[in-house]
Amino acid sequence: MEQTQTVEQKAPAKKYELTDETIKSWDGRTLHRIRALVAIASIGVAAGDLGGFIETETNLVQSGNAWAFGDAQVFGNAQVYGNSRVYGNARVYGNARVYGNAQVFGNARVFGNAQVYGNSRVYGNARVYGNARVYGNAQVFGNARVYGNAWAFGDAQVFGNAQVFGNARVYGNAWAFGDAQVYGNSRVYGNAWAFGDAQVFGDAQVFGDARVSGNAQVFGDAWVSLSIHVGWFSHVGSENGTLTYFRTKDGGIYTDRGCFDGTLDEFENAVKKRHGDTQIGKEYALLIEFIRLRATSWVQADAEAA
Image (cartoon, rainbow, N blue to C red; front, side, top):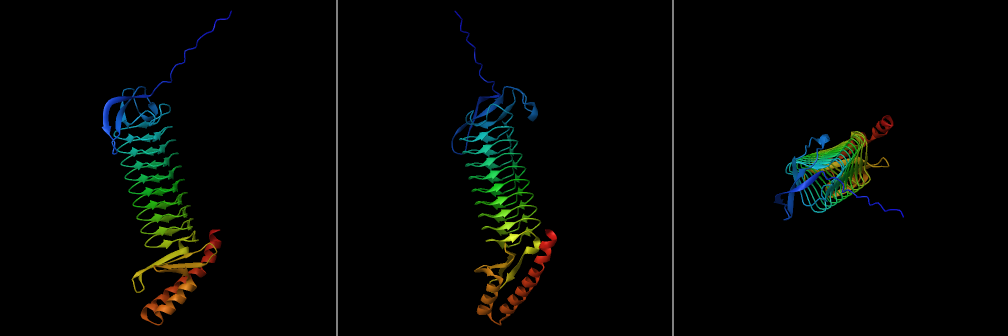
């Protein structure tokens, strides 16, 4: 008769334990400081080193090299895993995920259903939340916000007071900074920049080496791949507002002047009807002439860029 051999299954080794040192999260949860049980040489953690604060062991996966340092906090249903790091005064909570080689630090917050991964960095006072994704080599920092269903990826940088939200995408080598807002279904990519108080929204595409800044508003079916494809004039009209013009996907000219948006021909007709031969009407006529002249160079510029 064969004897049955019992094989004792060893529990997987843990890389950290919860200590008795606790703090409260902003929503009243009890968080425990962690202590390393083994060395994690790749990130400079020695056995016995104290780390950041987590609510339960589900917040920081025991496998891999992921770690929470200093006063960082991970709680709720959030998870940090892979080779990622959370440190400084950073907070990761809600259903957020930080993984890959990502780093979240400074006073940054990642929450909601947001995911930060790849080689990305979120730091400073940045906030990533909602269903947002930050990945690749993207960096979100300063007071920037990425939220909603927005994505920042590739080598993109979102910083300053910029906001990227809705279904917007910022990627490639693109930058969104200053007080810029990128939202809707818009895309900013390639080497493009959106900055100042600019707004890029709707289904607008800003890419190539284009620069959108000032108080410009680029939206709808905008197709801006060169800086020559967009322009704006400030302190014009009876309200001292901003007149923006930009190239559309079909090569047309679209304008926005606060209470009016439409093609350049439509704008010209509206000006004639409202302002006629007044001083403001004459000023607008000169601007319209300039825009038309500028637009004649688009065909050549597009051909050279192709």
